[in-house]
Image (cartoon, rainbow, N blue to C red):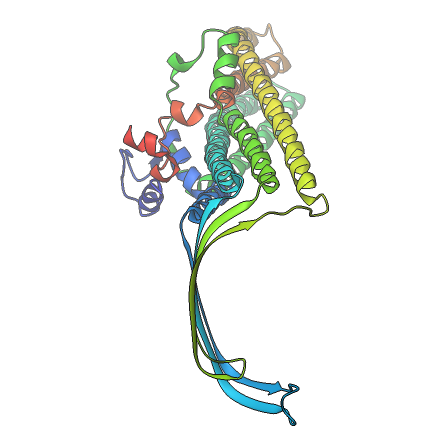
Length: 444
């Protein structure tokens, strides 16, 4: 596939397709590599190709079928007629060779219906492949953003430890001068331990994100690049977003094709109510047949009719079974539309609510930082306790951490909306491999 070259060149440390350096990997490049690396996508691609080959096999029934038959062996024949006193036994070496050419003329439209059914199924599998790629892309976006978020939280945790250690050193110096007590020193020591524990937790979380990234993408994180979000692709309101999602989502389109395929299956099974008409030509060249020495040759061209007048109701059962599968396909299509509507609505609400939350959290950060600065000044003149200062620093750390979480969650909600609408890979400018495209798409 197209992006396998990307995967290999990244592993070799080269710079294909605009990669800025051997140590940088953008979100778009990560998604492209993950799509080729994903076992789910590879398995679905194999399924798609299998159904395409099934359609090719079904189309072969429109062409003449040519069969060659040959056999050789020993044949012993015993005759006992009223004209002979003793039976006449003969043993001869028998040979047979024949060719049969058969051309289907009419089979109740079973072949045409089966070809159409497999065509719909192949296109459905192709769209399912695209839907799987969309889901893989969302997984990569999620872990990519989580890794960047974990990096920022790790930096905040490191800064938090440094701030607490600085206070600890100041309190230790003040204690030596008799300006602070042992309880103050113990208090700040406890806060330093808590800050370091938080730092370890942040580092462990970053390691977890690295492992998940490697599992999905198959490449080390290196230096990930903060993605630039294309806000112009966002729909103006929820109704438009839902309408676009229902119209364009590959899972819904695949479900619609599954309904068409199920209807063609019903048509195929109804072909059993009609006779099968073929034009057949035979040619045989045999020797020593039935105890008669010498060659035996014959050739014939015949129009054959095969009509199943009664088969115990099997045809009726197959038609009804196919009809129920069509009903199942309709219910799957309905379920897919409901899921798409729900996913789009949830992502839309999350995006808008997190946007409002970000603004409030930014105010929280500014206010907490101003309070911290004021508490430090007041502590230096004896108007605030050490506990007030430490609590203020914790408040600033948590406010910044909450803002970072909300900021990345807000970006993820936007990408989730694209995924719910079925256009995430398009929004990321990640092209599907040529093998996934129809002939119309390849022609542009």
